[in-house]
Length: 361
Image 1: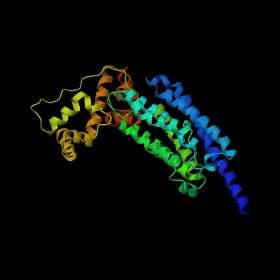
Image 2: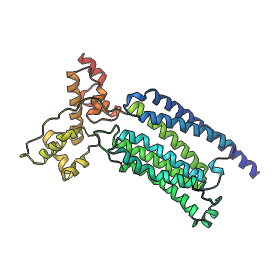
Image 3: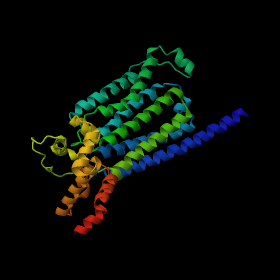
Image 4: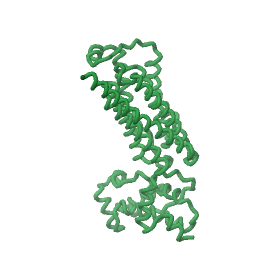
């Protein structure tokens, strides 16, 4: 009787997993097609990369469906299999192409070399060095062979995968050149780290639940990127830099004068990552004092002042040229997401951008 229930559970598990993998495959294929159709909008190769990666991932998902019913998935195999330990290192390298293309770091070849060389070395040693790997079926086997170099090497490779996503936080970032803001890069790194956590858990436990969570994380990760690219992301404008309002004289160096000087220096008020904390740190002052300076001199909070400054600039440009690309203007003044830009525009002007532009014509 127990055997019958177990077989029914396995069949139901395979059905659930097949449905998830099928939805994952369809979602990846559709996302790839949409990104490819609009690949020329960005002026970089980010959508090329993500579209191709989506299709390749869809192929892996389809093959996993066949392996599920053939009972040859990672859940039914040995722990720490070399294929599932070292091949993902190559996949991890691909994960970095997309955000790096958007960050556009200084000395990109140096950044690529620092990120990819350790992973490539681990993969080559792990798969091509002729190492004899001990087969590990149970935790008892793992504990028994834990001191063997081949086991420690596989555990080390998994730990590298788990921690490597955080390296994105170390890539030099310049908001003037980047085609993405820090929150998106942060969310991308967090999403990838979660995928690594579930992969690590699957390799060490072969838990069916962790396997499903790993696959669900892949779905949300790829669909989230596609949504951001096609619905939220505002692209780097192809417009000449403009001069901001001149700052105060060097003689006027009270706190407010220093604030204005920093904001106007190279158009810092347009920095999408500017916040009250970062501004206070730059001024070597307390955020309460800086916040009070905004209220006393403008009657607005820091956020209200920056929002009004940005939207007023967009409004002024549109009044001079109603045919101007409003989304390029949004990016220029520091917005990277459509919904945020449109919401703030409506808050300041009382109307939507499209209605405002129609009223100018």
